[in-house]
Length: 193
Image (cartoon, rainbow, N blue to C red; front, side):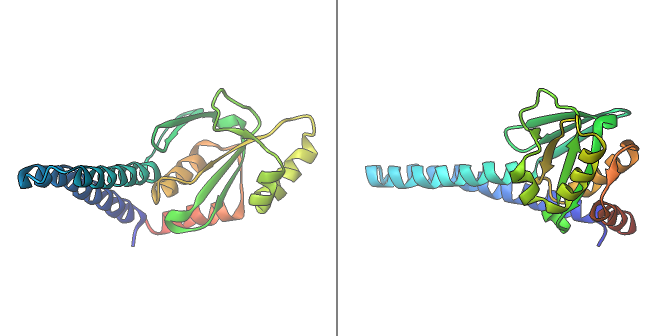
């Protein structure tokens, strides 16, 4: 199946689930009110169910949201709920790595420059343990530029939209090094388009 079709199905599935949960969110209090069973037990029980439904809606929105804008030399990526903005310069991105497959893929961006975004963290031992292959390439870059500080961010939300993002990064970040896994994911996207 093509990635674009998968993105459409993902979007349709998200809309259906949100409509169903919204319907339940409105329907349950209405039924409780019309049944005239005004009781504290029912009120507490209904409140808990409503809180669980709202939590599920927020979580579903959090894992689905991924928007990006690439303007010649700037990248602006918005992820999650509440919206988290990550702004990078294309020429400062050094390594792009993709890990996993399908909608569980994670895109790791390693850059020389930091921004005011709190979602871009300094490369540390925890990062090297969690992403050993990206850490290997980071070590190679660090040997060439020992005085440079490197920072990273991981994009794990958005499902199949990450394939499009990776392809756009490949077109825009011409000076960045793409790992073999990232190139394989880009090839898969282009073959399944």
